[in-house]
View 1 (cartoon, rainbow, N blue to C red):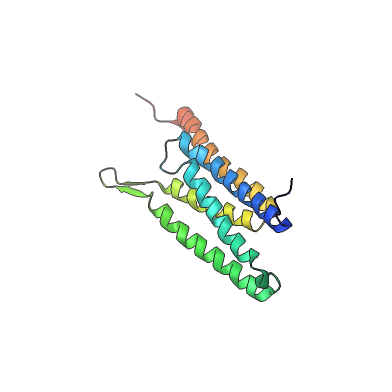
View 2: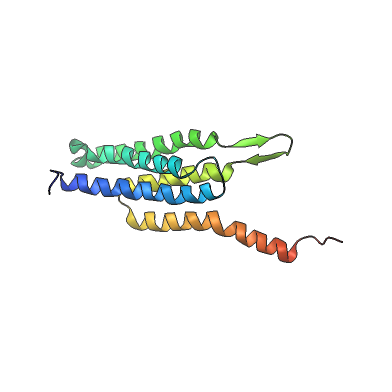
Length: 158
């Protein structure tokens, strides 16, 4: 059964699925920690960044003009990363009574997820793989290491 899709459209669909999967994976980590942005939010951020990237790549006249394509890709990168900063800023809270800031890791995760979405849109498969794995490791390992070190070298009770 053929849906009448071109090879570009099939490839674009796979890129969008990869972007959504990256967002879902990172969002799952955030959901496990009851953070404000979870699976749906990060999947949409990644998918949206991918769609913006693909929109520029899909336009036929741009594909045949390297200079025009370069400018479009630069604009996509700049625009998406700036716009996503506003989403990230929305999850950052300064708690005055505690004199600390909360939500920075979640905001950084939103930013990294958008980056992965752009990479999916541009089909940078090795970058996507290593970027997603490293992002997940960064979200999981440092806290575990810090807890273990605190347990071993923390302050004495007496």
